[in-house]
Length: 182
Image 1 (cartoon, rainbow, N blue to C red):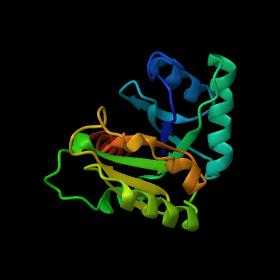
Image 2: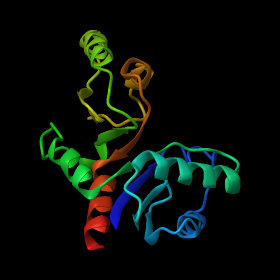
Image 3: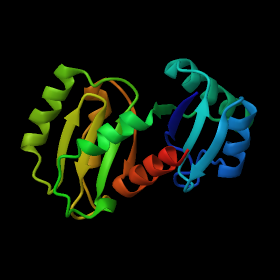
């Protein structure tokens, strides 16, 4: 059995793409996934599965949500080792407020040429945020919070050639803790 952490993109945001976490747990269990647990209301789940096929499992979950809830979120899966690795790569000061440090988990590996172009665009950006791209994650420190940031206007996903979903350090750490508890 493989333990997976599922990160659903754009669910329960601004009153859109609603899914209750109890419904998500039931849906995942209905797919034969075991030891299903959720965290917060933003589409975070931890479970075990016989399948080691990330893409197939992600598609099965997304399709089941589409059939049951009318929207098809992208489902980004990470193993505990992968999440632990991402947390270990956070390039910001450990004293930074963990709610202001975001990991954008990417569906696929970032396009290297796009990452270079993004770095060029960010070099001209005068905001207080810091952005670091690492293959399958984008790390962002929002020292003044996300709400007032103009950084969101930077077309990161288009440049990187893949989509992602963001979680703050508190959430990522809690998901790893849940996955390690079994």
